[in-house]
Image 1 (cartoon, rainbow, N blue to C red):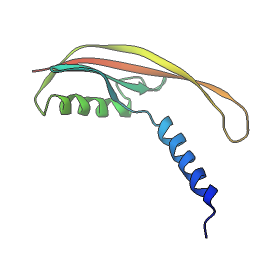
Image 2: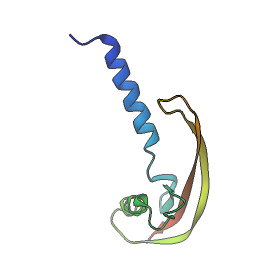
Image 3: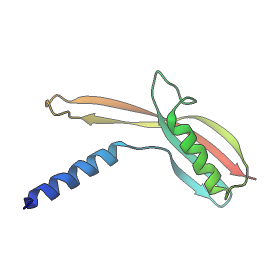
Image 4: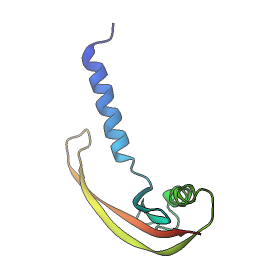
Length: 105
Protein backbone atom coordinates (compact mmCIF):
# COMPACT_ATOMS: atom_id res chain seq x y z
CA UNK A 1 0.00 0.00 0.00
CA UNK A 2 1.29 3.46 -0.90
CA UNK A 3 1.18 6.09 1.80
CA UNK A 4 -1.30 8.95 1.11
CA UNK A 5 1.36 11.61 1.65
CA UNK A 6 3.41 10.16 -1.23
CA UNK A 7 0.72 11.26 -3.72
CA UNK A 8 1.01 14.80 -2.37
CA UNK A 9 4.81 14.66 -2.59
CA UNK A 10 4.69 13.46 -6.22
CA UNK A 11 2.20 16.19 -7.13
CA UNK A 12 4.37 18.89 -5.55
CA UNK A 13 7.50 17.69 -7.36
CA UNK A 14 5.57 17.68 -10.65
CA UNK A 15 4.32 21.23 -10.09
CA UNK A 16 7.80 22.46 -9.19
CA UNK A 17 9.34 20.91 -12.29
CA UNK A 18 6.68 22.15 -14.69
CA UNK A 19 6.73 25.60 -13.12
CA UNK A 20 10.44 25.88 -13.87
CA UNK A 21 10.10 24.68 -17.45
CA UNK A 22 8.83 27.93 -18.88
CA UNK A 23 9.15 27.85 -22.68
CA UNK A 24 7.79 30.03 -25.46
CA UNK A 25 4.36 31.56 -25.05
CA UNK A 26 2.10 34.17 -26.60
CA UNK A 27 1.78 37.08 -24.16
CA UNK A 28 -0.21 39.50 -26.31
CA UNK A 29 -2.69 38.41 -28.92
CA UNK A 30 -5.05 40.04 -31.38
CA UNK A 31 -6.90 38.70 -34.41
CA UNK A 32 -4.03 39.34 -36.84
CA UNK A 33 -0.94 38.64 -34.74
CA UNK A 34 0.61 39.15 -31.34
CA UNK A 35 3.79 38.92 -29.29
CA UNK A 36 5.67 35.73 -28.44
CA UNK A 37 8.34 35.59 -25.73
CA UNK A 38 10.83 32.87 -24.86
CA UNK A 39 13.75 32.47 -22.45
CA UNK A 40 17.38 32.37 -23.55
CA UNK A 41 20.70 31.77 -21.86
CA UNK A 42 23.41 34.41 -21.61
CA UNK A 43 26.13 32.46 -23.44
CA UNK A 44 23.81 31.04 -26.09
CA UNK A 45 21.90 34.15 -27.08
CA UNK A 46 18.29 34.46 -28.27
CA UNK A 47 18.80 33.32 -31.87
CA UNK A 48 20.29 29.95 -30.86
CA UNK A 49 17.86 29.26 -28.02
CA UNK A 50 16.04 25.95 -28.31
CA UNK A 51 12.84 27.87 -27.48
CA UNK A 52 13.08 30.08 -30.61
CA UNK A 53 11.71 27.29 -32.82
CA UNK A 54 8.90 26.77 -30.31
CA UNK A 55 8.10 30.50 -30.52
CA UNK A 56 8.10 30.46 -34.33
CA UNK A 57 5.80 27.41 -34.25
CA UNK A 58 3.38 29.31 -31.99
CA UNK A 59 3.35 32.20 -34.47
CA UNK A 60 2.64 29.82 -37.36
CA UNK A 61 -0.14 28.15 -35.35
CA UNK A 62 -1.69 31.53 -34.48
CA UNK A 63 -1.66 32.46 -38.18
CA UNK A 64 -3.40 29.16 -39.02
CA UNK A 65 -0.46 27.92 -41.10
CA UNK A 66 -0.31 31.08 -43.23
CA UNK A 67 2.83 33.14 -43.42
CA UNK A 68 3.62 35.93 -40.97
CA UNK A 69 5.99 38.85 -40.80
CA UNK A 70 8.09 39.85 -37.83
CA UNK A 71 7.36 43.48 -37.01
CA UNK A 72 10.13 43.77 -34.44
CA UNK A 73 12.02 41.72 -31.92
CA UNK A 74 14.28 42.36 -28.98
CA UNK A 75 14.95 41.66 -25.35
CA UNK A 76 11.82 41.64 -23.21
CA UNK A 77 11.45 42.03 -19.48
CA UNK A 78 12.86 38.95 -17.77
CA UNK A 79 12.36 37.75 -14.25
CA UNK A 80 14.44 36.98 -11.20
CA UNK A 81 13.67 34.03 -8.98
CA UNK A 82 15.22 32.34 -5.97
CA UNK A 83 16.13 28.67 -6.30
CA UNK A 84 16.63 26.50 -3.23
CA UNK A 85 18.49 23.29 -4.10
CA UNK A 86 18.33 20.29 -1.80
CA UNK A 87 21.48 21.34 0.09
CA UNK A 88 19.59 24.36 1.48
CA UNK A 89 21.69 27.12 -0.10
CA UNK A 90 19.64 29.69 -2.00
CA UNK A 91 20.63 30.97 -5.41
CA UNK A 92 19.21 33.94 -7.32
CA UNK A 93 18.62 33.14 -10.99
CA UNK A 94 17.98 35.89 -13.54
CA UNK A 95 16.05 34.70 -16.57
CA UNK A 96 16.43 36.68 -19.79
CA UNK A 97 13.62 36.68 -22.36
CA UNK A 98 13.35 37.55 -26.03
CA UNK A 99 10.17 38.98 -27.59
CA UNK A 100 8.91 38.80 -31.17
CA UNK A 101 6.02 40.96 -32.37
CA UNK A 102 4.41 39.45 -35.47
CA UNK A 103 1.54 40.02 -37.91
CA UNK A 104 -0.23 37.30 -39.90
CA UNK A 105 -0.38 37.84 -43.68
